[in-house]
Length: 423
Image 1 (cartoon, rainbow, N blue to C red):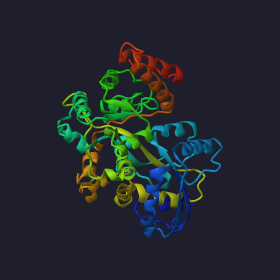
Image 2 (image 1 turned 120 degrees about the horizontal axis):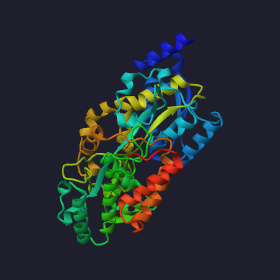
Image 3 (image 1 turned 120 degrees about the vertical axis):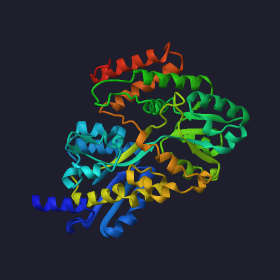
Image 4 (image 1 turned 135 degrees about the vertical axis):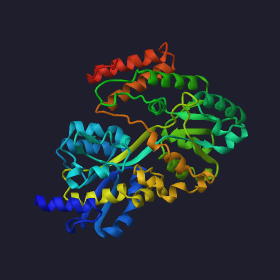
């Protein structure tokens, strides 16, 4: 049997499939646009594997996490064949339930396959010599902006190279467009702005090896300081996910900073904005500083209780490791490929009608090779709760400066995790 499985894995790795992987049923848990994107790949997949039935269940984001964690805790009971896992939460799974998911190497996932994806996407999916999931979408950060609001204020987005430039532009745009805010940030329920700018500057909650706390390092302090300057300048309104969408549609916000997957959200949720929106690179702390970061992104993992692992792996190979699968999701729903070869697909260089003819994917995906890897570690959720509370207190004037705020955050994270604060 071992010989048969090895041959099957090799055949899959080479792009063909063994007979026993060409039939059966597989079920995938996912959510929202991610689930819709997976559904968009089924037709292409079934042209190669007509006898494998793929069912995608849209459970919602939090229910997918809660049900899959509960399933792992129950020894795999009730789990589907494939689970969608957000990168930032991935290490929660592997650390608590290392036997809940298949090591993809046993199904034919080779070093050559792994090299098809950027390092920052694989950091949280691989533990020592095991690969628990295959990278799916990524979230290269971009600034999505309203061309008309910028033009009315005489602001050229190409002139915005630093966050100080962004603040100055925001004041002009708000003055020229009454009722419009420069940008939104979910200061009440997320640390998104801080995580994006900190990642751009090469700083994260934890060190690259996951063994120490780095949230109070100078680059993180500089990032948090700049966020308060933006807030104090009055160019940011706090808004959650749904409020941002409402603001996009209503035309009361000039810029949204998010991962590349947000392209699909704007385009599908605000169709009347076609031709009014554009994209530019995120600013930096200095004129010659880095202008690339990542926010979000997911992966697909095969559960150990799956009765059709080979078919599940064939699906992963098609949907995530071929240009055809990745571009299908990009075209339909703006799910940004992690697959490096997809950057060379002709579609990426095409002007997009919704975006005023701008080749937005060339601009957005061009930053992928520049993104600094950032570890979530098993303690990401604990750290996130602490940083959110500290951020709220800091923006409200509760600390003398960002260093004091993040020193407090680091101390609390140390108490919660047992990890040391890096020197």
